[in-house]
Figure 1 (cartoon, protein in one colour):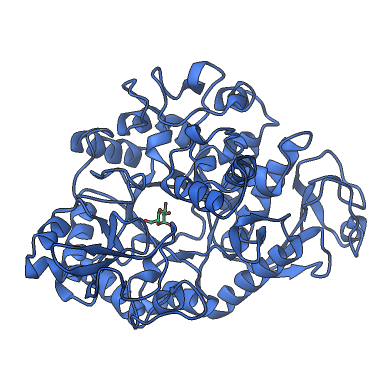
Figure 2 (cartoon, rainbow, N blue to C red; figure 1 turned 60 degrees about the horizontal axis):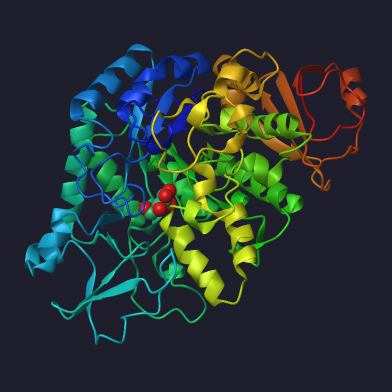
Length: 542
Ligand code: GLC
């Protein structure tokens, strides 16, 4: 499968388009927007989980991997979506949450009743009720172990207490998961995203004196063997696959994604989205460190290329805050910064992902009251931050910048009531700026953020250089500008991105490149100056 020239669009179904007025997005809502997606010219749609689920973690707590939650529609609706998208040349990618199941899954329910077979599907450990087996912390706060009095045992949950980790060491578990992939492949699904898949192989269950336990299970001992086996036996090799990797390394991502390893097509890594975490803590605010951002991109882009690996390129998904609010400007330079950020990512080496609403320049939610939040992580951390001594005001300021709900507010289709997302009451409030930022307004505007994304998608489709060229970072010492050079045969492409809200200079004036035969082919300002204007992006080709 060639995916070098492809672009993926991520849909968070709950917030994309509601078709029946219950305030939840649904599959028929997605079907009604296929024209919009075809117009954007994306190749794949990644749908986050729509499977039956108690929705403790918005569907990442799966209770049945082979069905559709009735709130999203029916299997017939889903089959129609696969067929209608396919007719437009768009493939579906489903989200496989295989590190854990919901505790409502029948496997876990049987385990709870003491069924030996199913107890071995999970990670149960003996222990006294007041002494969890290790001191590991859940990623959503609190201990990663939960005690079950009836069994006298603890089970592991790296995420919410209702998300029990599967025991991949058990071959029966691995067979179950392969069968699920075959089931969806038969339905015509064209690819898969694997949720936190580098956490599936747990190492030793020992206390972590230095951290939260992640070093024992991240990129764990058998992870590569398990992935090879899963891909080979389920017959999905050749389909487009992406693994979400938590706190991973370049060396491991090369192994996950280099074609000769026969694991995945590409990997998501998150280091570039932590440059505004003070001391590595998501809940401590800090201005973004642009120099660190550049160094991370340079090492991941060049390192993955050297090792034959392949990156998924992204700023946004349903977890991080909106990128314009984070690294751009939501005021005077909103449009310029949204375009600059788009170009910075889309012209790199890898496969770009667009998260719904990113192509409109959507911003953070702007909630000012805890009652507006829905996300389990945000609600947990609200209490943890308050208990840690932060005022309610400070806590809301932190959530306003860091909550996952920032990226989950409904898609802004038009300026009407509820942004055209629903005729009912949305499950999560619509951002009030939908009066200005919306798809209808931008579709009619050649200078819009949406129009700019369309150009970027078409450029990737048309250019071998963008799809396949090498990459080298330039202006490395410059703390304001991210810049790189792509090369393929005799063609060259240069990208200069100003991450500041003021004019900045380069070590080498842009006009000097013109003297070498470079021409400007894309940008977010008219003309070309020697320096870069606020949030300017300039793309030169030769
Ligand atoms: C991934 C998902 C996130 C989810 C977590 C646990 O990080 O993107 O939304 O909460 O895995 O499944």
